[in-house]
Length: 130
Image 1: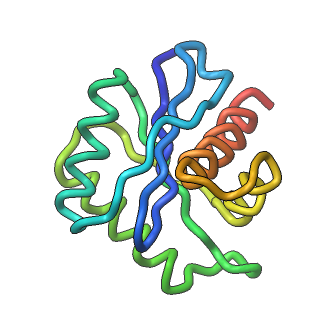
Image 2: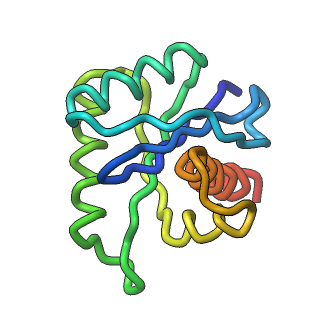
């Protein structure tokens, strides 16, 4: 199994996390400051290539009823942009509550968004082994 890169997209920053080569453990990787969708997408793809990720998982913040709100639609546009410039498969995953879960691990700091991405990725990885 190859590594998986997860993205917790945001208005100001995007958190990235990476799995171990076995696809069992997620760890925070880095936080990208948002500049433009095109630049963000290039940076995400570069990180995926650098860490030899075979899949990119993007967290989508659906509302309590499972519908996409404004933030989810922005994240889905990011997914579309990623799909346009890379052949790496891009999947989506419901990321509702990932930031709150990351805050329970540790108070807010410069890696909060990367920890939120790790929460998303760990949930995704756990679901694959169920």
